[in-house]
Image (cartoon, rainbow, N blue to C red; front, side, top):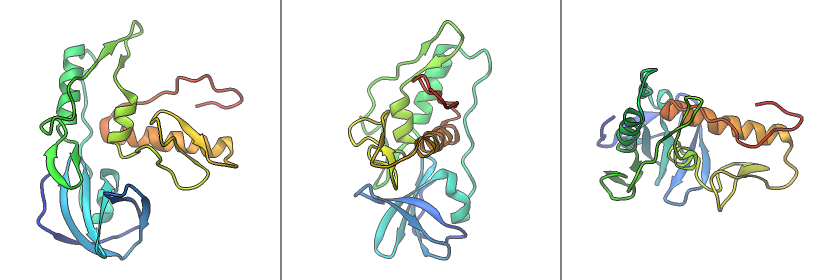
Length: 194
């Protein structure tokens, strides 16, 4: 994706957004108009009614844009191939206010990739989750992500198992859409399946 110089748009459907820099989740409504100020790294920074918002790449269509292609690895990819793709993907992650990717900005120092005996490759799920737009404290309602740890889902009071699982699936789908990586829960689920 590239930068935009205040390209106008009108939303074709409701989208979830995050107020920049406050990090508060909001919903932008169908028909709202504004300007795309930046489109880098698979997400958009938009200016609507005097505020900046981050809109996830999965909602590009609502802005009249195309979805970013999901990266793919060949089935016989080595750890080095996975690491290189991870670095390439990190270079597509931008701060909503600064048009410099997080690698060049100096926010990422290493990328650990580890092959498992069963053929899976592991990297930091917390990093993937946050870069897919699910920050600490994310969630509207009774289920959310902990304000202290990205990998912990919390019941804010009265949430059902179904609500927690729906949030987990939303996060997993967001990571898959952004990076092409399938997340699987490590905890053993009792009375519920993934």
